[in-house]
Length: 295
Image (cartoon, rainbow, N blue to C red; front, side, top):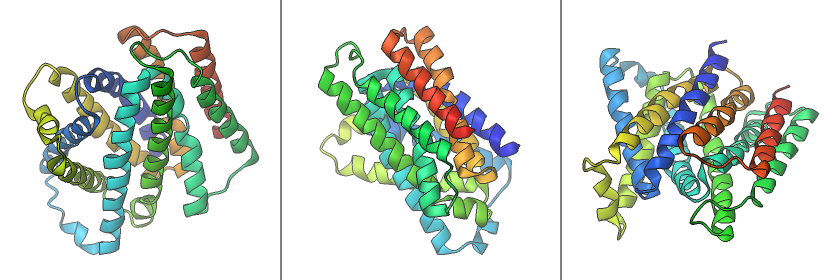
């Protein structure tokens, strides 16, 4: 059950990180926050590899194709998907974000079916329909303070796009993680390096480069962004990839979605987000969809 346990731990640590990221992205551009959390996570991964005294010599038995897939997975799933996600989080808040995040399971199931030939059962279509319905219900929610209806819908579209790109990025890496038995820590670190490098290049050529790199200067926002990066990009990342490595991709994706329960509770208690009737119905419907998919 190690794969299933890791998938659940990924959900719990991600829920805590999500609240902290919301507090961070209010003052930091999404690209800058994404780059910052990747750099912080890489520091922790470097320390981990030093403690494990793993010099990477065993990696010589893997092909360039294996490394290429992991690098592509990192660019898609970390650089692109997480930037879209942070922008969406800033626009729609944690409560609606976790509903949109439930599309993660259907996308994992879809790509696992298309790319890995994992079987789709009839009830999974029902669960997917419930989740999609919950997302559509969320579009009618009252926009968060300071946001318009158009920004709410735009944020949801960004969130959906983020889930699609993220799940595609991890599913294409499963044959390397599982079939090729690539070392977990190194696989995660390589994906992070790919994501960080892509974002660093983008930040260097952007007209807003000064604003993007300013996040690395110590400031009050670090009290949120540093622990958020540790929990979301280090611990949750290890648990997340481990779940995909040791469990079926579809099962790991489903268990990851339990973060919706933790996140909604934390957002209400810490961020004081209002739990309206429409949001509650959307959360319950999305959760029910995840349960049905997992049956």
